[in-house]
Length: 193
Image (tube, rainbow, N blue to C red; front, side, top):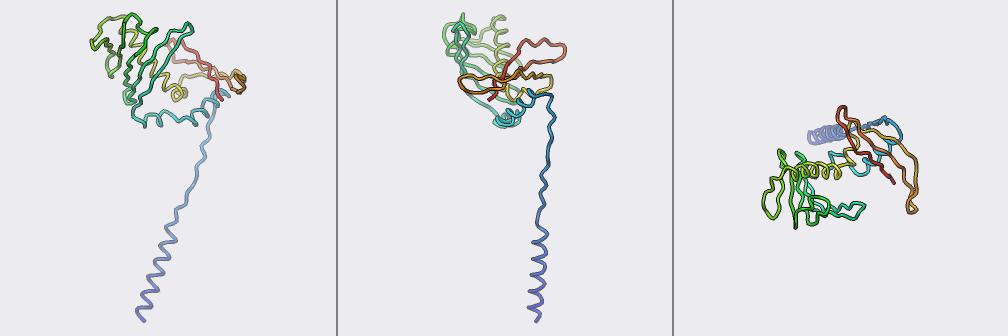
């Protein structure tokens, strides 16, 4: 009889414990306030491609970058970025618009403290060339991370309407920057499909 009572008590405790193990999950609703339609479109685009935290979780990236100006000058570079510290490296196999006075491949980088330039393995100390590197490294990094950085404070959005290009409909958003005393020179038009 004690065996039956012990089994009954054990089963009761087990049943009671299992019922209390249920976890109630509450889904929180986050309401986002958009500045305007342009801001809403950019925000939704970034939801699809991932935010800066998602990008940083990759730790680093390597890709080939081709840049061509309207007059046909082309740069082809292998870009490498480490997100922690925004460190960058570029090996230019072709550089018709960037430091075109050097023949053959050049390398440039930012090591977290200074910009550097190499040609044929030799460090180049030319201050004019190094100013170009100081422009290229953060600019190329910004262009790569631009989608994720379009939600940074100081970015302004203006919805310009819709446009069809090659049978595809796009919403056009003008993006500019207001960072106080600095004088940003770039204005972008984003074609969002």
